[in-house]
Amino acid sequence: MPRARDALLAAVLIAACTPAPDGRSASPTASGAAPAPASPASPPAGRTANNDARGFANQPDYDGEAAALKAAVASRLPDPLPADRKQACAAMFTAADALYRDIDPAGAALKLLQASRAADQSACERETSPRAAACVTVLLGDRNAELPWLLDQCSRAFPD
Image 1 (cartoon, rainbow, N blue to C red):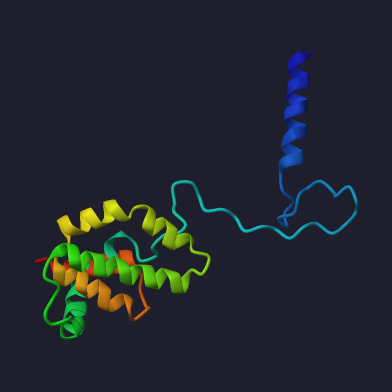
Image 2: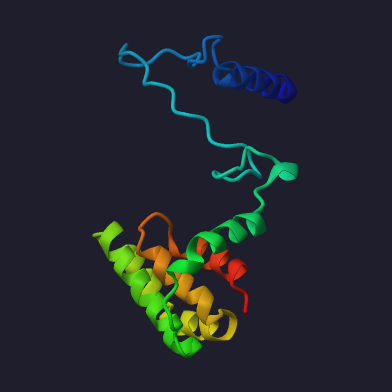
């Protein structure tokens, strides 16, 4: 008898949880009100919300984009360039602060950026050329891209 009861319970649960053919729940609403609109399905497990539809074999040519950026921005770099990495990185972060103050009035992005400022400054001085930092500084002033992308592209364009 316990097996028959378990089988019956399983069948009832399956029937109750199976959606109707039109996507609505098979069970009627208690109040008789119209059912709530269907919410969008969440992405399948193992996929990111920012899935690049171009696919693995068709990714952007970041080095090619950096070469084009180098040609476009080289004439806009300050002359003379900042004397050292510390000065160039400080100017870059000052420009980043100004950008994030403008685009995020609540200040959350700026607070996050400033919370890691000492580590970011140190990494910049170690890994970023003065020309790359100057490139980022100039392009942040255009207000059409954010710090991470510009830092990657300018570092590729001006690795020295």
